[in-house]
Length: 485
Image (tube, helix red, strand yellow):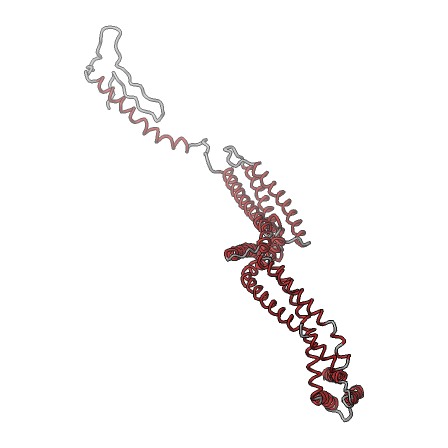
């Protein structure tokens, strides 16, 4: 643009100051024109256009001028420098300390679970010593954790005006806290390694806990089901129901858990419940069979009592024959058999009626006990009645032919003599003397059969005594030779 005398040209300086457009100078008096310069009627339009261009160019000039202003001498950088480097190092130390604190806290939590496992199971001196060691470590952990937290709280690394010296001091304290946390973590790890045997034992018992409690519950359920099945068949089984009901408090304690009653006590209680529930279940399942067995025994013992009553009625006739044909020694000890047999049979029949009443009332223990009493009475009666009959039979046999009894006794003596001489040229006097005496006793017993009134009862008792003596000698020889071998 060309300058005119009316509007001279002013260069635009690189500054923020905006140029002001100059209005055409107007004379105070009548208008005058300089010589040679005629006033153009389009001058005002050119001045307005120039002002608009200047205003549009200001933002571009400001954008070009800002970098120069910040890069120029005497300005200050907003980030970076020595303070920012120390801040970054302090922040890294803070992060490392936080990681160490987290690792230590996690390890302590895990170890606390292990200690709770041990204390729940084990109360031995070793376990109590481990508890004391863990408590001491806990106090040590609290100390170093407190120093770490104090170091974190003492330094605000996010301050804008953080000085390099403060950042360096923060880094030093946080690094020391991290190292101390690491050393305590190592102590904690070594302590955890030493708990291996105690923890293994405790975990083994805890592993047994849940299955043991579950077995107890299943055992009680099986016993209850078996009892229900018995009741459906018409049997009451009140005693079994009472035994099962007595286990309800034990089940309550099992459900309360080992945390309240202890692992060892809970395991013992579970095993006891399993045994008792199994016994109830087995008896409940066997109850129908037991009822049938009691019914069978009632019939069998009643039949036996009737038969013994009939046999006992024959004893007086046997005694009469013994008195008439043989010496008094063979029948005197049988004098009370008829009366005693009759009384025992009557008592047995009374007990049988009581046993039947107990069975009808399903009092199984009472019925069983009464039947046992009946059996004992009948056994005693049977022995007494059989003794009378057996004695008469033996006396009749030896009276008819005593040679069979003689041969039986001689065979026993000769067999013992052969055993005594086996491997020897002469027998041991301890063995030979009683055997020789036995031969002499047999000869004397045989001699008693001669004469007008032979004593068959003495003969029978003497031959039996000789055989017992010979049997004793044989046992002695075998024991001595067995010991020497």
